[in-house]
Length: 410
Image (tube, rainbow, N blue to C red; front, side):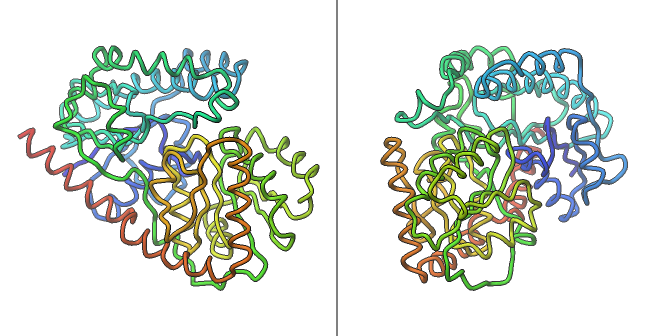
């Protein structure tokens, strides 16, 4: 069986959904599956330096003038508009160009099945039409909006544009027919299923979790939880992650606690200034970008991960924390609510700004006042992720999906 993985970005460095095709390729290679991959040239150097690289197995498309022009225009827009509108436009342009190349590669290489793991948006059309092999798309994970209490403050004016695009998704998917003609459509949850355009045949839709964990990496030795509590945030520092709310909540946590913020992004300097002005100044540490093994070691020694994001379809970092025997505090919204159970952490309802801050403070305080709670929940979290979210198990499931799609084509 020869598999072609098609994605705009295949990258651990970029994070987000770009890591998904990287994980599939790593597992397929380890399982001895004959693979080929196609992506944008921006990830070429990273892939060449990775353990995935084999000459002749990777193809790339270069930047076109139109992509550069749209990117330049987006620099002058608010970040929400840039991320949700201009970046989507660039993804569509790149996707169309990649699809043309994918068609040629599939013929040249005698590909048996084509897998498009990203984009994960259920409404975004796929350009993989008229392919010489069956196409598997997903798992997708989307249909997200901001919590109603935060919509006006955090959408930065993008709600109208996003709403219009979603309303037109049926039209787009009739014109750009990749999802209509795909052999399999995979969704992560009921929210995503409900968000699929009505024109898609639901009989070819199956459910498979979007995210997973590489247990060969996220497998630190069991460590004793710290006497003085340490809470850790990991993620890109952008407005929708809610880190400014976390800093405000942390002011009310017992003074022996520390907050470690790992990640980089456009909000970094603003958040540093906010922390410096807060009464918790001196207890909040910004670590910047860190490599995964370094993050693993920090999480293993933490009391809890905290993810106050207000627009999070997935939340892979929660699963990575669980693998490190570290429970999570997260927003009761989107992806995190599907991962965090009463045995593995706490979910805080985003019902309003002040009540959300109060909830974050209360759950951190609960961990601070009960040193054994993190250890108990951490063991349950590790067992939960092993049973349900191993990347190896996901890859084996995906191979069976490939075989089913190939069998139907024949």
